[in-house]
Length: 240
Image (cartoon, rainbow, N blue to C red; front, side):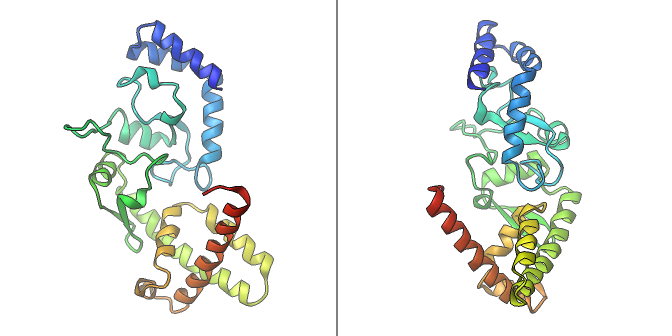
């Protein structure tokens, strides 16, 4: 793929490195687009979800920094993200806000940024609150607080709470395989950021505010179990 993309980048450069040249090369690069999309799908959360909203299926290759702004990054691997058609065409489009003084991008780049550093999720309402300028601009540009996303996150909160409790019950009953399948389904579910937020409540009073009296204990066991699994995986693979 590297050779194919490098070849296309050279053609963009030879054609003057213009927006029109970038568009023409991108449209003609069917093999490269197919391969890029395949790799992005392997990295996508849940069931091949959009890397922006985490709700809809990722169908488009979005250029995080628009082709019109930097034509020579059209085929750069780290400038490609899997997005749904709504986020790509109706929300982000060609928007790319930057700091007027430093020129730094003011959008969360999920390939290098941890969204939790910039956004706070209120799981019961599904609303995102900004913690930083990047969070503020990302909410606006990606439409992250549109009504259907808030409802989806709130529904996911209920699903994750009941799912973690079910997983805990299965463990206590000695149903290890059933518990494993439940855990896999929870990890593959939509809106994984909701589960991550709930995991952050483990061992805190916040876990008790989510109504179900069985949840705090189940969540504590869940987070301890999965932290151990991640530590084992890191030890064996060298991945951090």
